[in-house]
Image 1 (tube, rainbow, N blue to C red):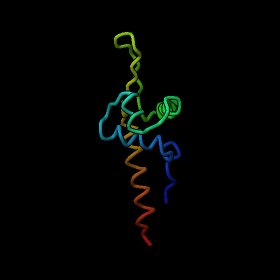
Image 2: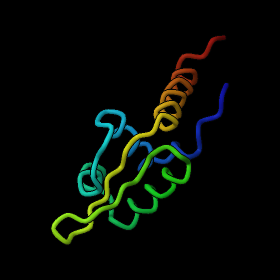
Image 3: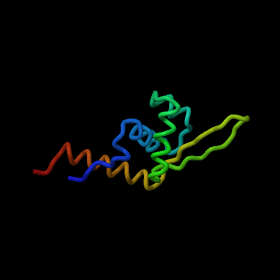
Length: 95
């Protein structure tokens, strides 16, 4: 069986990617609210996903306030689909 992707095999990173699979682009505050994580932890996990090429992070200012948006990349979508396939293989092994 294939090994699970260590980048996605984290509860918070998997939650972030799962939300982005559904919505494609989300802002930091929405992700923070939905995942119930701290700003610091969310920032660290977003950076790990960005470094892996799974998401693209865009930062800008809106009314003098920083606004961070995360977008799912093709690589991220592919990694997520492979992760789900790997989980299914564990749940339904072919004897």
